[in-house]
Amino acid sequence: MRLDRTVAEVAALLGGHVEGPPELRLAELTSLEDAGPADLAPVFPTRAAAAAAAALAATRAGALLAGTRASLPDLPAGAPPRSVIRVENAELALDALVSALVPADEPPPPGVHPSAVLAEGVSLAADVSVGPHVVLGRGVVIGARTRLLPGVWVGDHAVIGADGVLHPHVVIGSRCRLGDRVTVYASTVIGREGFGFRQDKDGRHTRIPQRGIVVLGDDVEIGALCAIDRARFTETRIGNGCKIDNLVQIAHNVQLGEHCALAAQTGIAGSTILGRRVLMGGQCAISNGLRIGDGAVVGGNSGVMDDLEPGIYVTGYPALAHKAWARDVVLVRRLGELVARVRALEKALADGGTAQGGSGQAP
Image 1 (spheres, rainbow, N blue to C red):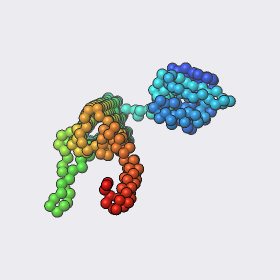
Image 2: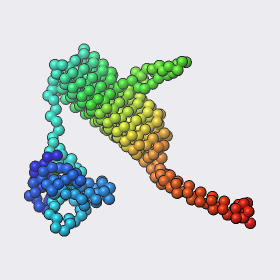
Image 3: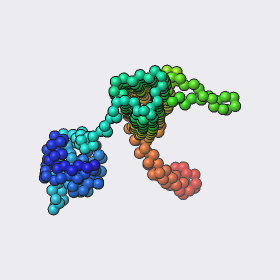
Image 4: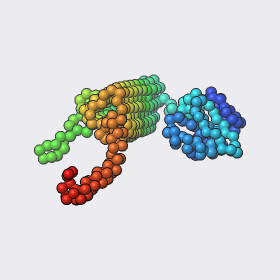
């Protein structure tokens, strides 16, 4: 990311102070691994200690962005001086710097594009933007300042709150409701019929009607290529402040409490209920009809098959309390060694038994 600022100018922008030469003109903001003598690289305390130490020792960065309490290694003898911009919180400072370097895209102006299709009874509040090839069904209600980007499709009688953004090719099913300040990224589908079939006497699948809706609370963010299925006859509900990554599947009648966060490729089966502030890593699989307590944390690649108590941290497949899972992993890794020891003991007993006439028993 292009900087074209001096170390002193970046420090002033971030409210930090400079250790070392302040006059160096910085070319790029980049990583420790990729930085050159004219580049700025951030140093984060969240990196694994060994990896961070190795990266810092090897970096060619001319300047570092680091927290006030971050420990940095001494430069090798004869190396050119390095500038350090010290800030209270390096991660927050990096966010501010990136925002200053690349401002957010300008929102489209209010109004309805000539290629948009609006059915009878559509209601648009003040300063709504309806982009090219957007389709709004009968009786759709759009709140103030909400932006519908090209190709959005909204079904009959759906309601979308104020200050939202629906990115290209988002689909909102009929009668679904989105709160205020909701962001949905490209090609996500909210409100398709849930996956429900019965087998008839001949083994053929017949669809179970799914006629409920999806309700999203305020300040929800849904990533790209997600699917949130409508309920069978009530509501699939996503609570206020929930953040959902790309490629997440949420089945019919699932309930998410407030401020949950789900990472990419997580799948939640039907009728499972999550409490508040539940966190799930990538590629989690959650079985149907479960109850996940407030504040539970599910590690990535875990498979949850039973209810989880509030505050628990689980990992593995099937998911266990993290300490139990870690213990089991250590034991599994020792199985080869243990098998070899058992075989050695069996051989020793067999050899001893042969020497005693083959009985294998103590005299």
